[in-house]
Image 1: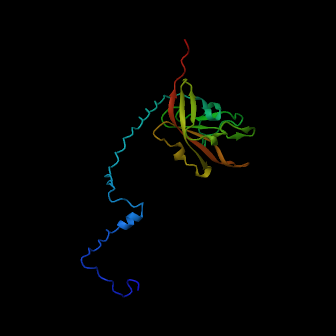
Image 2 (image 1 turned 90 degrees about the vertical axis):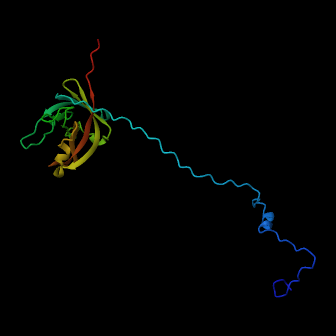
Length: 227
């Protein structure tokens, strides 16, 4: 009979030492060459060390505030990115308290709101120009291509140049034009370039306006004559 089916196994013979069974796992260790030897030295895991705190990064110093300029009328407006270099004329509000555009016959002329701040003065200065005329594209035809970070330079009668940096370009319908947002003071010298926008109707003209928001970032002094 096979062992374990109910037959009794014979007991050990007297005077003969019993066979000592191998330790548990010994046979498996001998039969498996990949099993680790009990004499193998196992290194305990290293204690976790917290990472050193990050070094404090030094922020670059803030640029000094731009010096405000005394009053002096604008003479030319230059937008290097658009290859615009245009003369400037002064404009005043009409009877309906609106700022008119320069004459249609002078498509390359920029109008500066003369009753507002001059270039580099505190407050929000305003310049307007045509998008197009009957003869084709006008001085502000490319304003939609401007992006934040581009510069707008305004030359003054005293020889200085006020350099503005573009912050944003926004479009508004004339029925919902936000006067306070566009013309309101911001606590620093700013500039608005305004032209037509939206859809065009032959009877009523354009339905909206495009506005460029910029702030003063530099003042360029006039070049000194060579000795």
